[in-house]
Amino acid sequence: MTVDVQDMQDVRDPGGGWAELVAAAVVGAGRRGVDERALLDAAAAATVRRRAGALPAPARALPEPAAHDPRPRLPAAARRRLAALLADRSGPGGGSRRGPTPDLAELIPEWLRYAVECGYQAPPELLPALLDAARARVDLRPHALALAGPRGLWLAERAPQWAPLLRDGAAGPALPDPRDAAAVRALWEEGPRAGGPGTSQVRGALFAEVRRADPAGAVELLASTWASEKAEDRLAFVELLRTGLSRADEPFLEEALGDRSRGVRAAAADLLAGLAGSALAGRMAARVRSLVVLDRSEEPPVVAVEAPYECDAAMQRDGVVAKPPAGMGERSWWFGQVVAAAPLAVWSEVFDGRTPEEVIALPVADGWRPDLLAAWSRAAARQHDAAWARALLGTAPAAPDEPPGFTAGPPGAVPSPGAAVATGTAAGAGEQIPGRDPARLLTALPAAERAAWVAEFISAHGLSEAFRLLGACAVPWPEELGRAVVDALEIARDGGSYPWSFSGVMGLAERCLDPSYAIRLEPLAAMHEEAEESSPGAAGYWSEAFQRLVATLRIRAAMRDELAAPPALRP
Image: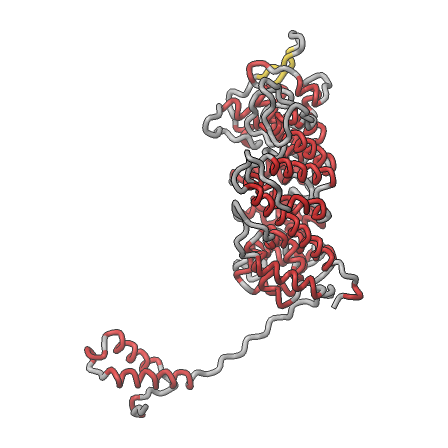
Protein backbone atom coordinates (compact mmCIF):
# COMPACT_ATOMS: atom_id res chain seq x y z
CA MET A 1 0.00 0.00 0.00
CA THR A 2 1.39 3.39 -1.04
CA VAL A 3 0.44 6.55 0.83
CA ASP A 4 1.46 10.06 -0.20
CA VAL A 5 3.70 11.52 2.51
CA GLN A 6 1.85 14.83 2.18
CA ASP A 7 -1.38 13.06 3.20
CA MET A 8 0.15 11.97 6.52
CA GLN A 9 -0.39 14.26 9.48
CA ASP A 10 2.38 15.15 11.89
CA VAL A 11 2.50 12.41 14.53
CA ARG A 12 2.68 15.11 17.13
CA ASP A 13 -0.81 16.24 16.13
CA PRO A 14 -2.66 13.19 14.80
CA GLY A 15 -6.13 14.23 15.94
CA GLY A 16 -6.98 16.49 13.02
CA GLY A 17 -6.21 13.99 10.26
CA TRP A 18 -8.07 11.21 12.06
CA ALA A 19 -11.10 13.44 12.58
CA GLU A 20 -11.21 14.19 8.85
CA LEU A 21 -11.09 10.52 8.01
CA VAL A 22 -13.91 9.74 10.47
CA ALA A 23 -16.03 12.56 9.10
CA ALA A 24 -15.56 11.31 5.54
CA ALA A 25 -16.50 7.78 6.54
CA VAL A 26 -19.64 8.92 8.38
CA VAL A 27 -20.89 11.29 5.69
CA GLY A 28 -19.86 9.03 2.82
CA ALA A 29 -16.80 9.06 0.64
CA GLY A 30 -18.84 9.88 -2.47
CA ARG A 31 -20.43 12.94 -0.94
CA ARG A 32 -17.01 14.22 0.12
CA GLY A 33 -15.56 13.58 -3.35
CA VAL A 34 -13.08 11.08 -1.98
CA ASP A 35 -12.27 7.73 -3.56
CA GLU A 36 -13.31 4.91 -1.20
CA ARG A 37 -10.10 2.94 -1.80
CA ALA A 38 -8.03 6.00 -1.04
CA LEU A 39 -10.07 6.60 2.12
CA LEU A 40 -9.40 3.07 3.38
CA ASP A 41 -5.69 3.39 2.56
CA ALA A 42 -5.49 6.65 4.44
CA ALA A 43 -7.34 5.17 7.43
CA ALA A 44 -4.95 2.22 7.55
CA ALA A 45 -1.94 4.52 7.40
CA ALA A 46 -3.42 6.79 10.07
CA THR A 47 -4.00 3.83 12.34
CA VAL A 48 -0.38 2.72 12.04
CA ARG A 49 0.80 6.28 12.57
CA ARG A 50 -1.34 6.75 15.69
CA ARG A 51 -0.05 3.54 17.23
CA ALA A 52 3.57 4.22 16.35
CA GLY A 53 3.35 7.76 17.63
CA ALA A 54 1.82 6.90 21.01
CA LEU A 55 4.06 7.82 23.88
CA PRO A 56 4.41 5.26 26.70
CA ALA A 57 2.53 6.22 29.85
CA PRO A 58 4.18 6.01 33.25
CA ALA A 59 3.95 2.51 34.65
CA ARG A 60 1.38 2.05 37.41
CA ALA A 61 2.70 1.23 40.82
CA LEU A 62 2.31 -2.41 41.64
CA PRO A 63 -0.17 -3.11 44.46
CA GLU A 64 1.10 -4.39 47.75
CA PRO A 65 1.19 -8.20 47.70
CA ALA A 66 -1.24 -10.18 49.77
CA ALA A 67 -0.17 -11.03 53.28
CA HIS A 68 1.50 -14.39 53.83
CA ASP A 69 -0.85 -17.25 54.72
CA PRO A 70 0.93 -19.61 57.13
CA ARG A 71 -1.76 -22.29 57.07
CA PRO A 72 -0.98 -25.68 55.50
CA ARG A 73 -2.08 -26.52 52.00
CA LEU A 74 -4.90 -28.92 51.35
CA PRO A 75 -4.10 -32.61 50.84
CA ALA A 76 -4.14 -33.57 47.16
CA ALA A 77 -7.37 -35.57 47.46
CA ALA A 78 -9.11 -32.67 49.19
CA ARG A 79 -7.94 -30.26 46.47
CA ARG A 80 -9.43 -32.51 43.81
CA ARG A 81 -12.64 -32.76 45.82
CA LEU A 82 -12.96 -28.98 46.12
CA ALA A 83 -12.37 -28.56 42.39
CA ALA A 84 -15.12 -31.09 41.65
CA LEU A 85 -17.57 -29.43 44.05
CA LEU A 86 -16.97 -25.98 42.60
CA ALA A 87 -17.22 -27.26 39.01
CA ASP A 88 -20.57 -28.92 39.79
CA ARG A 89 -22.14 -25.95 41.57
CA SER A 90 -23.86 -24.68 38.41
CA GLY A 91 -25.35 -28.08 37.62
CA PRO A 92 -29.05 -28.92 37.33
CA GLY A 93 -29.64 -29.04 41.11
CA GLY A 94 -33.02 -30.08 42.47
CA GLY A 95 -36.33 -30.80 40.87
CA SER A 96 -39.18 -33.24 41.34
CA ARG A 97 -37.04 -36.15 40.11
CA ARG A 98 -33.29 -35.88 40.46
CA GLY A 99 -32.31 -39.48 39.87
CA PRO A 100 -29.66 -41.31 41.90
CA THR A 101 -26.86 -38.75 41.33
CA PRO A 102 -25.87 -36.67 44.38
CA ASP A 103 -26.16 -32.90 44.22
CA LEU A 104 -22.55 -31.91 44.87
CA ALA A 105 -23.33 -28.20 45.14
CA GLU A 106 -25.25 -28.85 48.36
CA LEU A 107 -22.13 -30.35 49.93
CA ILE A 108 -20.01 -27.21 49.52
CA PRO A 109 -21.09 -25.61 52.85
CA GLU A 110 -20.12 -28.70 54.86
CA TRP A 111 -16.83 -29.09 53.01
CA LEU A 112 -15.89 -25.44 53.59
CA ARG A 113 -16.85 -25.54 57.26
CA TYR A 114 -14.81 -28.65 57.92
CA ALA A 115 -11.79 -27.38 55.93
CA VAL A 116 -11.77 -24.16 57.97
CA GLU A 117 -12.06 -26.13 61.21
CA CYS A 118 -9.05 -28.21 60.13
CA GLY A 119 -7.02 -25.04 59.54
CA TYR A 120 -6.25 -25.31 55.81
CA GLN A 121 -5.79 -22.58 53.20
CA ALA A 122 -7.47 -22.56 49.79
CA PRO A 123 -5.41 -23.56 46.73
CA PRO A 124 -4.46 -20.35 44.84
CA GLU A 125 -5.60 -21.77 41.50
CA LEU A 126 -9.12 -22.36 42.88
CA LEU A 127 -9.57 -18.91 44.46
CA PRO A 128 -11.52 -17.37 41.52
CA ALA A 129 -13.97 -20.29 41.41
CA LEU A 130 -14.30 -20.21 45.21
CA LEU A 131 -15.02 -16.47 45.25
CA ASP A 132 -17.53 -16.87 42.41
CA ALA A 133 -19.34 -19.56 44.40
CA ALA A 134 -19.39 -17.35 47.49
CA ARG A 135 -20.69 -14.41 45.45
CA ALA A 136 -23.59 -16.53 44.20
CA ARG A 137 -24.50 -17.96 47.64
CA VAL A 138 -24.58 -15.79 50.74
CA ASP A 139 -24.50 -18.84 53.02
CA LEU A 140 -21.02 -19.72 51.73
CA ARG A 141 -19.40 -16.35 52.36
CA PRO A 142 -18.09 -16.58 55.95
CA HIS A 143 -16.36 -19.94 55.50
CA ALA A 144 -15.33 -19.28 51.89
CA LEU A 145 -13.60 -16.03 52.89
CA ALA A 146 -12.00 -17.70 55.91
CA LEU A 147 -10.62 -20.48 53.69
CA ALA A 148 -9.55 -18.00 50.98
CA GLY A 149 -7.54 -16.09 53.57
CA PRO A 150 -5.33 -13.09 52.71
CA ARG A 151 -5.06 -13.93 49.01
CA GLY A 152 -8.82 -14.22 48.58
CA LEU A 153 -9.48 -10.99 50.42
CA TRP A 154 -6.75 -9.28 48.37
CA LEU A 155 -8.61 -10.30 45.21
CA ALA A 156 -12.06 -9.37 46.56
CA GLU A 157 -10.89 -5.87 47.49
CA ARG A 158 -9.66 -5.24 43.91
CA ALA A 159 -12.36 -6.85 41.76
CA PRO A 160 -15.82 -5.18 41.71
CA GLN A 161 -17.58 -8.49 41.02
CA TRP A 162 -16.37 -9.83 44.37
CA ALA A 163 -17.06 -6.72 46.47
CA PRO A 164 -20.24 -8.25 47.98
CA LEU A 165 -18.04 -10.82 49.71
CA LEU A 166 -16.82 -8.10 52.07
CA ARG A 167 -20.31 -7.76 53.57
CA ASP A 168 -21.67 -9.15 56.86
CA GLY A 169 -18.41 -9.37 58.74
CA ALA A 170 -16.94 -12.02 56.44
CA ALA A 171 -13.72 -10.11 55.76
CA GLY A 172 -12.02 -10.69 59.10
CA PRO A 173 -8.38 -11.27 58.04
CA ALA A 174 -8.33 -8.07 55.88
CA LEU A 175 -9.55 -5.83 58.71
CA PRO A 176 -7.40 -4.12 61.32
CA ASP A 177 -7.10 -5.58 64.77
CA PRO A 178 -10.28 -4.40 66.56
CA ARG A 179 -8.09 -3.41 69.52
CA ASP A 180 -6.12 -0.98 67.34
CA ALA A 181 -8.29 2.09 67.99
CA ALA A 182 -6.47 4.37 65.54
CA ALA A 183 -6.64 1.92 62.61
CA VAL A 184 -10.28 1.11 63.35
CA ARG A 185 -11.19 4.81 63.50
CA ALA A 186 -9.38 5.55 60.22
CA LEU A 187 -11.14 2.75 58.35
CA TRP A 188 -14.50 3.57 59.95
CA GLU A 189 -14.39 7.24 58.98
CA GLU A 190 -12.88 6.87 55.52
CA GLY A 191 -13.21 3.29 54.34
CA PRO A 192 -11.29 1.79 51.40
CA ARG A 193 -11.47 4.07 48.34
CA ALA A 194 -13.79 6.35 50.36
CA GLY A 195 -17.18 6.59 48.73
CA GLY A 196 -16.35 3.89 46.20
CA PRO A 197 -17.72 0.40 45.66
CA GLY A 198 -17.62 -1.84 48.69
CA THR A 199 -17.12 0.92 51.27
CA SER A 200 -20.34 0.29 53.22
CA GLN A 201 -19.75 -3.48 53.14
CA VAL A 202 -16.27 -3.11 54.62
CA ARG A 203 -17.54 -0.74 57.32
CA GLY A 204 -20.24 -3.25 58.20
CA ALA A 205 -17.65 -6.00 58.46
CA LEU A 206 -15.44 -3.74 60.59
CA PHE A 207 -18.35 -2.93 62.92
CA ALA A 208 -19.16 -6.63 63.33
CA GLU A 209 -15.55 -7.40 64.24
CA VAL A 210 -15.35 -4.56 66.76
CA ARG A 211 -18.71 -5.57 68.23
CA ARG A 212 -17.47 -9.11 68.87
CA ALA A 213 -14.26 -7.86 70.51
CA ASP A 214 -15.56 -4.79 72.37
CA PRO A 215 -19.38 -4.38 72.45
CA ALA A 216 -19.30 -1.02 74.22
CA GLY A 217 -16.57 0.30 71.93
CA ALA A 218 -18.66 -0.62 68.89
CA VAL A 219 -21.58 1.45 70.18
CA GLU A 220 -19.27 4.42 70.79
CA LEU A 221 -17.90 4.04 67.25
CA LEU A 222 -21.40 3.96 65.77
CA ALA A 223 -22.62 6.90 67.84
CA SER A 224 -19.73 9.05 66.57
CA THR A 225 -21.06 9.00 62.98
CA TRP A 226 -24.71 8.08 63.55
CA ALA A 227 -26.16 11.40 62.37
CA SER A 228 -24.43 11.16 58.99
CA GLU A 229 -25.18 7.49 58.26
CA LYS A 230 -27.69 6.54 55.56
CA ALA A 231 -30.94 4.93 56.75
CA GLU A 232 -30.09 1.55 55.22
CA ASP A 233 -26.71 1.54 56.99
CA ARG A 234 -28.25 2.63 60.31
CA LEU A 235 -30.64 -0.30 60.09
CA ALA A 236 -27.84 -2.75 59.28
CA PHE A 237 -25.75 -1.52 62.22
CA VAL A 238 -28.67 -1.76 64.66
CA GLU A 239 -29.24 -5.37 63.55
CA LEU A 240 -25.56 -6.10 64.23
CA LEU A 241 -26.09 -5.02 67.84
CA ARG A 242 -27.84 -8.37 68.44
CA THR A 243 -24.36 -9.81 68.93
CA GLY A 244 -23.42 -9.15 72.54
CA LEU A 245 -26.68 -7.30 73.31
CA SER A 246 -26.75 -6.09 76.92
CA ARG A 247 -28.18 -3.38 79.17
CA ALA A 248 -25.19 -1.22 78.25
CA ASP A 249 -26.75 -0.82 74.76
CA GLU A 250 -30.07 0.45 76.11
CA PRO A 251 -29.34 4.22 76.08
CA PHE A 252 -28.29 4.08 72.43
CA LEU A 253 -31.30 1.97 71.43
CA GLU A 254 -33.68 4.25 73.35
CA GLU A 255 -32.37 7.15 71.26
CA ALA A 256 -32.87 5.06 68.12
CA LEU A 257 -36.58 4.73 68.98
CA GLY A 258 -36.89 8.34 67.79
CA ASP A 259 -35.03 7.74 64.51
CA ARG A 260 -36.52 9.21 61.34
CA SER A 261 -36.49 5.77 59.67
CA ARG A 262 -39.38 3.45 60.55
CA GLY A 263 -37.20 0.39 59.93
CA VAL A 264 -34.57 1.61 62.40
CA ARG A 265 -37.25 2.36 65.01
CA ALA A 266 -38.76 -1.11 64.62
CA ALA A 267 -35.37 -2.84 64.88
CA ALA A 268 -34.44 -0.89 68.02
CA ALA A 269 -37.81 -1.69 69.62
CA ASP A 270 -37.39 -5.37 68.82
CA LEU A 271 -33.98 -5.48 70.49
CA LEU A 272 -35.21 -3.61 73.57
CA ALA A 273 -38.23 -5.88 73.90
CA GLY A 274 -35.91 -8.89 74.08
CA LEU A 275 -33.59 -7.20 76.58
CA ALA A 276 -34.52 -8.24 80.12
CA GLY A 277 -35.02 -5.29 82.42
CA SER A 278 -35.09 -2.63 79.70
CA ALA A 279 -37.24 0.46 80.14
CA LEU A 280 -39.23 -0.48 77.04
CA ALA A 281 -39.95 -3.91 78.51
CA GLY A 282 -41.12 -2.18 81.68
CA ARG A 283 -43.44 0.11 79.70
CA MET A 284 -44.90 -2.88 77.86
CA ALA A 285 -45.36 -4.72 81.19
CA ALA A 286 -47.27 -1.73 82.54
CA ARG A 287 -49.52 -1.76 79.48
CA VAL A 288 -50.39 -5.46 79.76
CA ARG A 289 -51.24 -5.02 83.45
CA SER A 290 -53.92 -2.56 82.38
CA LEU A 291 -55.13 -4.72 79.50
CA VAL A 292 -55.25 -8.23 81.02
CA VAL A 293 -56.65 -9.18 84.44
CA LEU A 294 -57.66 -12.39 86.18
CA ASP A 295 -61.36 -12.41 87.05
CA ARG A 296 -61.37 -14.29 90.35
CA SER A 297 -65.14 -14.06 90.70
CA GLU A 298 -65.41 -17.02 88.35
CA GLU A 299 -64.53 -20.59 89.27
CA PRO A 300 -62.12 -21.41 87.87
CA PRO A 301 -60.79 -17.86 87.38
CA VAL A 302 -61.10 -16.45 83.86
CA VAL A 303 -58.68 -14.23 81.97
CA ALA A 304 -60.37 -10.98 80.96
CA VAL A 305 -58.92 -8.82 78.15
CA GLU A 306 -59.57 -5.16 77.38
CA ALA A 307 -57.62 -4.47 74.18
CA PRO A 308 -56.37 -0.92 73.42
CA TYR A 309 -58.86 1.47 71.81
CA GLU A 310 -56.12 3.55 70.19
CA CYS A 311 -52.46 3.32 69.23
CA ASP A 312 -51.09 6.50 70.75
CA ALA A 313 -47.77 8.17 69.99
CA ALA A 314 -46.04 6.53 72.97
CA MET A 315 -47.05 3.07 71.76
CA GLN A 316 -45.85 3.82 68.25
CA ARG A 317 -42.51 5.09 69.58
CA ASP A 318 -42.14 1.76 71.40
CA GLY A 319 -42.49 -0.13 68.15
CA VAL A 320 -46.25 -0.80 67.93
CA VAL A 321 -47.28 -0.51 64.27
CA ALA A 322 -50.56 1.36 63.98
CA LYS A 323 -51.91 -0.01 60.71
CA PRO A 324 -52.98 -3.68 60.85
CA PRO A 325 -52.55 -6.12 57.96
CA ALA A 326 -55.54 -6.77 55.73
CA GLY A 327 -58.25 -8.82 57.40
CA MET A 328 -57.17 -8.10 60.99
CA GLY A 329 -58.88 -5.74 63.42
CA GLU A 330 -56.98 -2.80 64.85
CA ARG A 331 -57.53 -3.64 68.52
CA SER A 332 -56.44 -7.25 68.07
CA TRP A 333 -53.37 -6.12 66.12
CA TRP A 334 -52.29 -3.59 68.74
CA PHE A 335 -52.99 -5.99 71.61
CA GLY A 336 -50.90 -8.78 70.07
CA GLN A 337 -47.91 -6.49 69.56
CA VAL A 338 -48.01 -5.23 73.15
CA VAL A 339 -48.24 -8.75 74.62
CA ALA A 340 -45.46 -10.05 72.34
CA ALA A 341 -43.14 -7.24 73.47
CA ALA A 342 -43.88 -7.57 77.21
CA PRO A 343 -41.48 -9.57 79.42
CA LEU A 344 -42.90 -13.02 80.07
CA ALA A 345 -42.06 -12.70 83.75
CA VAL A 346 -44.94 -10.22 84.15
CA TRP A 347 -47.53 -12.96 83.67
CA SER A 348 -46.56 -14.73 86.87
CA GLU A 349 -47.39 -11.46 88.65
CA VAL A 350 -50.66 -10.92 86.76
CA PHE A 351 -51.79 -14.51 87.34
CA ASP A 352 -50.92 -15.01 91.01
CA GLY A 353 -47.60 -16.78 90.59
CA ARG A 354 -48.84 -19.44 88.17
CA THR A 355 -46.34 -21.36 86.03
CA PRO A 356 -46.38 -20.99 82.23
CA GLU A 357 -48.28 -24.30 81.92
CA GLU A 358 -50.88 -23.11 84.40
CA VAL A 359 -51.21 -19.73 82.71
CA ILE A 360 -51.77 -21.34 79.31
CA ALA A 361 -54.43 -23.65 80.77
CA LEU A 362 -56.55 -20.74 82.10
CA PRO A 363 -59.84 -20.09 80.27
CA VAL A 364 -59.98 -16.78 78.40
CA ALA A 365 -63.15 -14.75 77.98
CA ASP A 366 -64.57 -13.27 74.77
CA GLY A 367 -62.48 -15.25 72.29
CA TRP A 368 -59.13 -13.63 73.09
CA ARG A 369 -57.32 -16.93 73.72
CA PRO A 370 -55.88 -17.33 70.18
CA ASP A 371 -54.45 -13.78 70.31
CA LEU A 372 -52.84 -14.40 73.69
CA LEU A 373 -51.30 -17.73 72.70
CA ALA A 374 -49.95 -16.38 69.41
CA ALA A 375 -48.42 -13.34 71.16
CA TRP A 376 -46.94 -15.49 73.95
CA SER A 377 -45.37 -17.69 71.27
CA ARG A 378 -43.68 -14.70 69.64
CA ALA A 379 -42.50 -13.46 73.03
CA ALA A 380 -41.06 -16.85 74.00
CA ALA A 381 -39.08 -17.06 70.75
CA ARG A 382 -37.88 -13.46 70.99
CA GLN A 383 -36.84 -13.77 74.64
CA HIS A 384 -35.46 -17.32 74.24
CA ASP A 385 -37.51 -18.45 77.21
CA ALA A 386 -37.27 -22.26 77.35
CA ALA A 387 -39.92 -22.66 80.07
CA TRP A 388 -42.56 -20.80 78.07
CA ALA A 389 -41.51 -22.51 74.84
CA ARG A 390 -41.97 -25.94 76.46
CA ALA A 391 -45.40 -24.97 77.77
CA LEU A 392 -46.54 -23.62 74.41
CA LEU A 393 -45.19 -26.55 72.43
CA GLY A 394 -46.52 -29.19 74.79
CA THR A 395 -45.14 -32.71 74.91
CA ALA A 396 -44.63 -34.28 71.52
CA PRO A 397 -47.29 -37.00 71.51
CA ALA A 398 -47.18 -40.71 70.95
CA ALA A 399 -50.17 -41.73 68.89
CA PRO A 400 -50.73 -45.49 69.07
CA ASP A 401 -54.15 -45.20 67.41
CA GLU A 402 -52.79 -43.06 64.61
CA PRO A 403 -50.83 -44.69 61.75
CA PRO A 404 -47.36 -43.10 61.46
CA GLY A 405 -46.97 -40.93 58.38
CA PHE A 406 -50.42 -39.34 58.75
CA THR A 407 -51.19 -36.04 60.47
CA ALA A 408 -54.91 -36.50 60.82
CA GLY A 409 -56.14 -38.39 63.86
CA PRO A 410 -59.11 -40.75 64.06
CA PRO A 411 -62.56 -39.23 63.61
CA GLY A 412 -63.62 -37.15 66.60
CA ALA A 413 -60.20 -37.26 68.25
CA VAL A 414 -59.06 -34.23 70.25
CA PRO A 415 -55.69 -32.93 69.02
CA SER A 416 -52.83 -33.52 71.40
CA PRO A 417 -50.41 -30.70 72.25
CA GLY A 418 -47.83 -31.69 69.67
CA ALA A 419 -50.43 -32.15 66.94
CA ALA A 420 -51.83 -28.75 67.83
CA VAL A 421 -48.46 -27.13 67.23
CA ALA A 422 -48.06 -28.71 63.81
CA THR A 423 -51.49 -27.65 62.60
CA GLY A 424 -51.36 -24.17 64.11
CA THR A 425 -53.84 -24.78 66.91
CA ALA A 426 -53.53 -24.03 70.59
CA ALA A 427 -51.61 -26.39 72.82
CA GLY A 428 -54.15 -28.69 74.38
CA ALA A 429 -57.07 -26.99 72.63
CA GLY A 430 -58.63 -26.87 69.21
CA GLU A 431 -58.81 -23.25 68.10
CA GLN A 432 -56.74 -21.76 65.29
CA ILE A 433 -53.84 -19.45 66.19
CA PRO A 434 -52.76 -17.03 63.47
CA GLY A 435 -49.03 -16.42 63.37
CA ARG A 436 -48.05 -19.53 65.34
CA ASP A 437 -44.50 -20.63 64.48
CA PRO A 438 -43.45 -23.82 66.31
CA ALA A 439 -40.09 -23.87 64.52
CA ARG A 440 -39.20 -20.56 66.19
CA LEU A 441 -40.38 -21.85 69.56
CA LEU A 442 -38.05 -24.80 69.21
CA THR A 443 -35.05 -22.48 68.89
CA ALA A 444 -35.61 -21.45 72.52
CA LEU A 445 -34.89 -25.01 73.67
CA PRO A 446 -31.45 -26.62 74.13
CA ALA A 447 -30.28 -28.48 71.02
CA ALA A 448 -30.68 -31.97 72.51
CA GLU A 449 -34.18 -31.28 73.80
CA ARG A 450 -35.15 -29.72 70.48
CA ALA A 451 -34.05 -32.81 68.55
CA ALA A 452 -35.79 -35.16 70.99
CA TRP A 453 -39.07 -33.25 70.65
CA VAL A 454 -38.95 -33.32 66.85
CA ALA A 455 -38.04 -37.02 66.86
CA GLU A 456 -41.10 -37.81 69.00
CA PHE A 457 -43.27 -35.66 66.77
CA ILE A 458 -42.09 -37.43 63.60
CA SER A 459 -42.57 -40.85 65.19
CA ALA A 460 -46.20 -39.93 65.91
CA HIS A 461 -47.15 -37.86 62.87
CA GLY A 462 -44.73 -38.68 60.08
CA LEU A 463 -43.01 -36.12 57.89
CA SER A 464 -45.87 -34.11 56.43
CA GLU A 465 -45.45 -31.25 58.92
CA ALA A 466 -41.83 -31.85 59.86
CA PHE A 467 -39.75 -29.94 57.30
CA ARG A 468 -39.49 -26.61 59.17
CA LEU A 469 -39.19 -28.38 62.50
CA LEU A 470 -36.19 -30.31 61.19
CA GLY A 471 -34.66 -27.08 59.93
CA ALA A 472 -34.61 -25.83 63.53
CA CYS A 473 -32.46 -28.76 64.69
CA ALA A 474 -28.69 -28.71 65.02
CA VAL A 475 -26.53 -30.55 62.46
CA PRO A 476 -25.63 -33.38 62.33
CA TRP A 477 -28.82 -34.89 63.64
CA PRO A 478 -28.35 -36.98 66.78
CA GLU A 479 -29.05 -40.72 66.70
CA GLU A 480 -32.64 -40.47 67.97
CA LEU A 481 -33.69 -37.89 65.39
CA GLY A 482 -31.86 -39.58 62.51
CA ARG A 483 -33.53 -42.90 63.32
CA ALA A 484 -36.99 -41.25 63.44
CA VAL A 485 -36.47 -39.63 60.03
CA VAL A 486 -35.21 -42.83 58.39
CA ASP A 487 -38.09 -44.86 59.84
CA ALA A 488 -40.63 -42.29 58.64
CA LEU A 489 -39.12 -42.30 55.13
CA GLU A 490 -39.35 -46.08 55.01
CA ILE A 491 -42.99 -45.96 56.12
CA ALA A 492 -43.74 -43.31 53.47
CA ARG A 493 -42.14 -45.53 50.82
CA ASP A 494 -44.19 -48.52 51.92
CA GLY A 495 -47.31 -46.35 51.69
CA GLY A 496 -46.97 -46.44 47.90
CA SER A 497 -46.85 -42.70 47.17
CA TYR A 498 -44.20 -40.94 45.13
CA PRO A 499 -41.11 -39.64 46.99
CA TRP A 500 -41.44 -36.13 45.59
CA SER A 501 -43.76 -35.05 48.41
CA PHE A 502 -40.84 -35.73 50.76
CA SER A 503 -38.09 -34.22 48.60
CA GLY A 504 -37.47 -31.41 51.10
CA VAL A 505 -36.96 -33.82 53.98
CA MET A 506 -34.86 -36.10 51.78
CA GLY A 507 -32.65 -33.14 50.88
CA LEU A 508 -32.22 -32.29 54.57
CA ALA A 509 -31.37 -35.93 55.32
CA GLU A 510 -28.61 -35.87 52.71
CA ARG A 511 -26.96 -32.94 54.49
CA CYS A 512 -27.89 -33.60 58.13
CA LEU A 513 -27.81 -37.37 58.71
CA ASP A 514 -24.64 -38.77 60.17
CA PRO A 515 -22.67 -40.38 57.28
CA SER A 516 -22.65 -43.68 59.20
CA TYR A 517 -26.32 -44.11 58.20
CA ALA A 518 -25.22 -45.12 54.68
CA ILE A 519 -24.88 -48.77 55.75
CA ARG A 520 -28.35 -48.82 57.32
CA LEU A 521 -29.92 -47.28 54.22
CA GLU A 522 -28.42 -49.68 51.67
CA PRO A 523 -31.34 -52.16 51.89
CA LEU A 524 -33.80 -49.31 51.19
CA ALA A 525 -31.87 -48.34 48.06
CA ALA A 526 -32.58 -51.75 46.51
CA MET A 527 -35.68 -52.24 44.39
CA HIS A 528 -38.59 -53.79 46.26
CA GLU A 529 -41.80 -55.32 45.02
CA GLU A 530 -44.44 -52.74 44.26
CA ALA A 531 -47.77 -53.17 46.01
CA GLU A 532 -50.92 -53.17 43.91
CA GLU A 533 -52.21 -49.97 45.52
CA SER A 534 -48.92 -48.12 44.93
CA SER A 535 -48.62 -45.29 42.45
CA PRO A 536 -47.20 -46.48 39.11
CA GLY A 537 -43.41 -46.60 39.20
CA ALA A 538 -43.22 -45.36 42.82
CA ALA A 539 -40.91 -48.21 43.88
CA GLY A 540 -38.32 -47.25 41.26
CA TYR A 541 -38.42 -43.60 42.19
CA TRP A 542 -37.99 -44.41 45.88
CA SER A 543 -35.06 -46.66 45.04
CA GLU A 544 -33.39 -43.79 43.14
CA ALA A 545 -34.02 -41.41 46.04
CA PHE A 546 -32.44 -43.77 48.57
CA GLN A 547 -29.52 -44.50 46.20
CA ARG A 548 -28.86 -40.76 46.01
CA LEU A 549 -29.08 -40.48 49.80
CA VAL A 550 -26.62 -43.35 50.31
CA ALA A 551 -24.20 -41.97 47.69
CA THR A 552 -24.34 -38.50 49.25
CA LEU A 553 -23.61 -39.86 52.73
CA ARG A 554 -20.63 -41.80 51.37
CA ILE A 555 -19.25 -38.69 49.68
CA ARG A 556 -19.61 -36.76 52.94
CA ALA A 557 -17.71 -39.48 54.78
CA ALA A 558 -14.96 -39.41 52.13
CA MET A 559 -14.77 -35.61 52.35
CA ARG A 560 -14.06 -35.80 56.06
CA ASP A 561 -11.45 -38.53 55.62
CA GLU A 562 -9.66 -36.48 52.95
CA LEU A 563 -9.59 -33.35 55.09
CA ALA A 564 -8.50 -35.19 58.21
CA ALA A 565 -5.19 -36.35 56.76
CA PRO A 566 -2.43 -36.16 59.41
CA PRO A 567 -0.06 -33.15 59.08
CA ALA A 568 2.89 -35.42 58.17
CA LEU A 569 1.06 -36.47 55.01
CA ARG A 570 -0.01 -33.00 53.93
CA PRO A 571 1.81 -31.75 50.83
